[in-house]
Amino acid sequence: MDGRVPLIGFSGAPFTLASYLIEGGGSRNYIHTKKLMYHHPEAWHSLLTLLAGLVNGYLRGQVAAGAEAVQLFDSWVGCLSPDDYRRYVLPHTRAALAGIAPDTPVIYFGTGDRTDPTETDIVNRFYAVKNDWAVTTADLAESDLVDVTDDLIQLGTAAQRAAVQASLDAGKGWYIRLENPGEKVVASPRVYAGVVYFTTYTPPTTGGGDPGDPCAVSTVRGVARLYAVHYKTGASVHDFSSTVETNAESEVVELGKHDRVVALGTAIPSAPVIAILEGGARLFVGVEGGIVSMPTIETPDMHRYFWHQPF
Image (cartoon, rainbow, N blue to C red; front, side, top):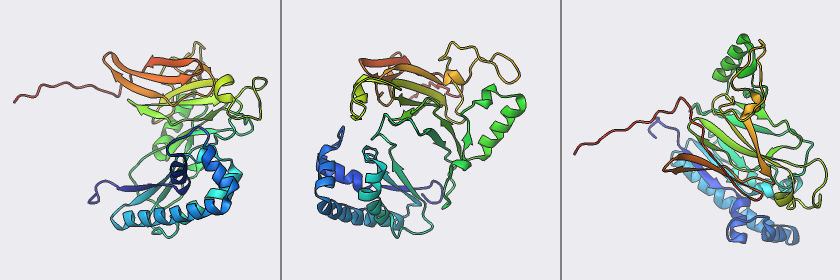
């Protein structure tokens, strides 16, 4: 954009495009896609080879037309296990990105591990990456982000709070480790008025349904939670908890780590949905048995302006 605003090109990834072609739209479990993949691997790889070539040409064309970075969306790849992804999809994803100009940054967007929602061995994270409008070809690692899990920007000493803020100012973003066993993000987050909203699912430790059926957890087990944190720091923005918290200097704080999150109910929650209604913005999340609704959180950095336009 004349050097003023970076222009990002994008395309669907081969697997996600194949899923739409086979299913005819979105799907809960992608049964037809997996049936072709497992039972007719030659046809599957022929289809993805064709799609990878089309995607590659499409992305190259966008770079030639002035795109300064490209993004490949694999929105449905989370329905696969890691082994299936490596065997049936990864070679075609690489082919779709092969030969892109070496100085053009490439972003690959894939969903998380939804194939095994009962898994409890991995400590999942929620990442927030800062957009500083800088064009770079360097890979971004977790070490480039600030671990704000302990919420030291609210619970630390004065020196710790200052150090965390300095790290956030200099870093590429932040992340939170999800500390409940097996807790994982299962839907897209929402950002509104300086607040990041995201939902998580924590599987039960015992009982409830067939542990070999990953679909069973969608309706009968586990805990659904909603997080609401400041988009720049990961700090709490709403008094969700009745727990009294003190900082490292033994001072009672208005908001602390426990205020980041509230349990909404059971089963796998939906993504947060924000609706602007006559009475103000409200947030909706689907859980087992219905929908949870609450007002969005008002933050001091959002100012409303009203004016009259004369004609």
